Image (cartoon, rainbow, N blue to C red; front, side):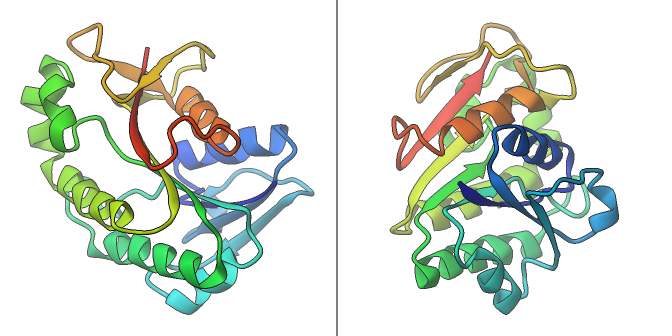
Length: 209
């Protein structure tokens, strides 16, 4: 499958790139800083660009089968209007190029999920990253209002630990600890499975151990 990954140079993005290549997908990595992506492969194309540049985004999305977003803010703990504009550009470009499948990485503490995210995320982390949560909420509203075949993935706190290959997923599942976590390898695994699994089509799904 031909897929494009936005935010491919981040920790989660790189996990997506590596696993997608291991699964024999043809991958386009859209990044602001190519030097941060420490992956080379014959099936990998790297596009340097900014998501606020609509023309570049549309050209990158042409002829893809699916779009995965692991976009993060440029400055931690701050709102990032460029990324919000970028999601708007991605949605617009997908509609214009007739690419339907979008898999978007969000966060467990978005909207109603915050009440069931576990004590630490609900009362501490959600306050620290409130600006990033607000960005996710705004971007999710854009996606929810689009005609795309989207899936919104809401994991808890992500870690760099090795993937277990075993995790729970569902729209209403609840954490088993006060600070639920999930490895980036496992969230990448789940996101890539959505390329062929329609269980959560046009749904927001929680993923955790």
